[in-house]
Image (cartoon, rainbow, N blue to C red; front, side, top):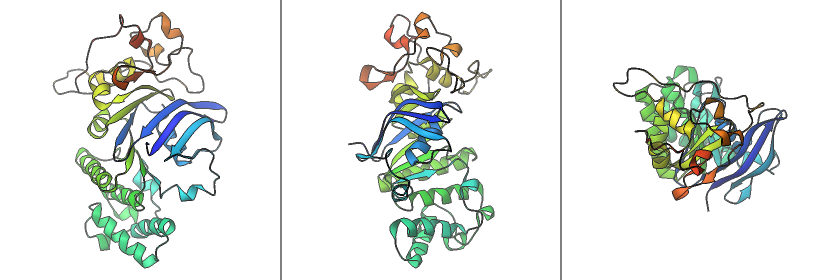
Length: 324
């Protein structure tokens, strides 16, 4: 049984449909990558799993199950037993996700004390051990620092320490390396891999960077306009993409020796006013008559799924494989 399973999740905010039938499966010790442009529903899916919907947000239908336990029907008083202890979140900006008025050691200790009910002295001791484990120098001294006294990379390590403080079964990492340079990005990703291996945590990694997703994930979901348009193993999605949107994303990656950067024409659609038919059709260079009807995410060869009529009409499928 998967640790976390999302089935046909439909979400609305103030009457506007934001997520359209999301399916997602997270397995123990595995990383599931979620990639797509801004505004396609990646982070909102993570917030729905965490029970952290914005004002006006509600789950219309669908299921979110943690080891068989349904989360969509939980009362708000039950969420503190889940959030932070069984499902943890690493947000995009470590500076705004940390409390500027608290020392970082106390913030880690607070998570341990609240969820595991140990003595405060024991929680502080474990906090210092975690600071050391995530690679922040001088852990005893660093525990007494405030967030503004630390570098961006150190703050991100503290956020990850808080997330792993209670050994969660599921970790949602929402753009965990966005504000970091390439060297720090590699260090943070290595840290996530090491902690995941030690704890057996299932990770949902959200990123705009296909390179990061390719290096970290065993399976990948490509999001567009609030839905999943392609799903498969990392090898399938990155080496032999079947959806034109995935192909366009990979084609837009910069490469050594490339003289001109490629881009996807147009803009993602307004989720409250999606075009009829395939949502990617207005930007797609391969659209044809069938695209006036919205395709479903269909299971193809070797469980490689795609929401595109081109997959069903084999005479039109491009044979181009995009190198990664």
